[in-house]
Length: 107
Image 1: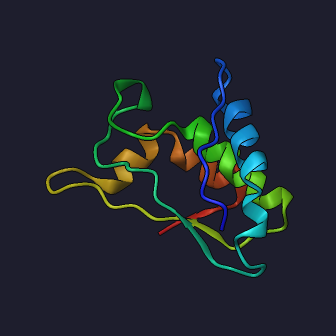
Image 2 (image 1 turned 135 degrees about the horizontal axis):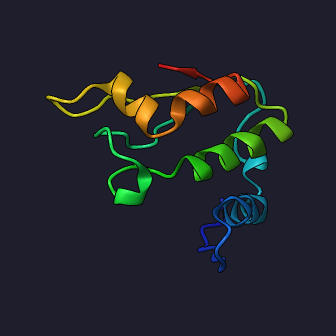
Image 3 (image 1 turned 90 degrees about the vertical axis):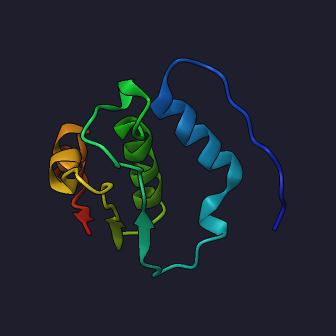
């Protein structure tokens, strides 16, 4: 594995994420047919603009990248912290829409 830091600059988080993934050649690292779990850090039911959760734009770009490279067994793995609702966080943070748009199941 080539351990290197890949940087990108700009304002378009979707494009920037895809650029980094393409430069990293992630598809060469993950075996075909793998079950892929994405953990977006939805510990609280707050939008990503609060800084508390991962941007759904970044996760959407990751899912699109994976699907473009024929990875289709993808789940979003999440659990909020004690006292908050994971289901509520999933909805408020935009992951319910992502799940439907990309046919990716929450877990």
